[in-house]
Length: 308
Image (cartoon, rainbow, N blue to C red; front, top):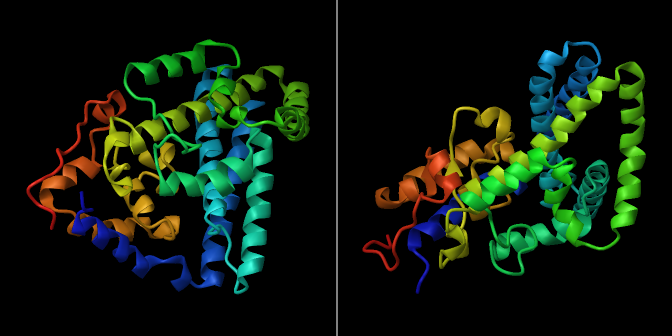
């Protein structure tokens, strides 16, 4: 079966927004400001946890978890594409992005080299296939709800959905991660022991958002699509600015051309939206968050009448 011509057009359209066309100075300023604001949010949430009433702990924990998730989306994810920071020298650019990505992964017990630097490349080439280390079997429907219940109801349940647990050197990653986290835990405990609840909710929210993200991007049977480019969806919902930070919900576009920086994905989306034939738009660009999460969104039947 031949790949539809319109999918090829969406890939080519991304070249107009390619990272190679971006000014390193402007790009680095944008990402530098974004990283600073992201970590200010994390610090403020943790600081607030030491002084506010416990009534506000769930809200602070969810905000903290969303910021943790943004840390992955902006820093680790963009670094894995060598797009967090740009330099004129390609070797220096790879070194800087690799170093930042690896350091950013440590507090979250994440194997950057295998799961991101190497694994994310495989994910883009063969999404949802058996050798995809990131999303070989996207959860949705009852299986997803069961996993979410485990994350929230089992003590330390967020550790169950850390994808790096499948790699070796667990003790080393755990030790390095604890070296980063224990000082934070110690300070929070000394100031207000109950504030550790916010940190716990933050990590639990991080695991939850990642599971929901995978379901939205690649769930609901998208693994059965015959063409890798069609195994992802762009989705919109009311709280996307908080729970899908840095435009990660423009996921069809990201898989069509992963060299487009996050801040240009909305502009790329406008072009892609006009390219996709009207009979396919609702399949790959939608606002049916719950249907996608539960696996009832549906797929087009191939072969279809239009390949234009």
